Length: 414
Image (cartoon, rainbow, N blue to C red; front, top):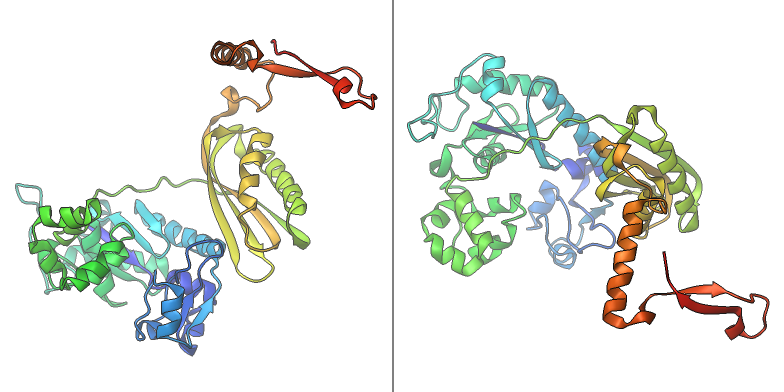
């Protein structure tokens, strides 16, 4: 049984500085600079004007001219959401989370840990209908819900169901003090098809389905899978499976240790100044004792911008690295994407790799493997393009005023 924990408008609340700021009027997260011009999460007052997450900025302003655009804060959101997941994991939950504000976990172990047993399963593996009030939480879920609420200490909506999407539907319907259970396709039948927007993979089929007159998930579930696949492809098949209560299995994350370095810049930095700050950050991170000689597989580069808001970029290396030069080359390409000068730069490790015993530097000329590869590459190039395919520049007379006498070309040999 899957349990969903939903913190409504989590990114918007963090960026705005609290829920009190959202009560002043319609608000939405502004598009991130350099990316598609679509609004992020929107407040309830903005939803009353027909504005929703993912809507084009021009259309959102046309529907709600008084819409306040709040600069996104991806670094603050990531830090706050990491604390929330850590609280869930503290009660024994193996959490899966693909986006801030929404987390899933399997209730099987927690139900026994916090008092209660899961309902029996049928012969085909499906769970029998839930006991208790219609739409309410069954007795076995009460202990899990109370443990989660005590750990979070936040107004969260909790739902449960046999699949991830069913649990999400229950969390959307739930109230702050009452968990909701959605029992498969039967419980999803009356839900609006707009619920598919909660799954980014299937969000693009919502508007076409509404124009075709399909307004509920029950109507979508009764349609032929072949016709849906013919019209929408794999995305349509996914939407059809979700409407029938089927979803992929949970993939809980592996909790890791936090290792990061932060550098406050004395003045707004960009260009060469940022590159020098990155060099210092990489060296400091690799020198940390907590690294214990391990390589780095994925890191997160973040910055606090002078104009307000933050910037965050996740970088996954092609192979685990412990060489500062190679890391700077990979991370330096991401600094170009920064939309404004920064007043603080941060580098954090997201996932470690194996020990650095087998790692090698970028310019390790003494490596026999690299030398052998270079010789093979030169041989193949000359076999295709002739003996002049690989040449080197030799300096002969650098002080000559005639450019042709300063250097000559010679065959490249290792």
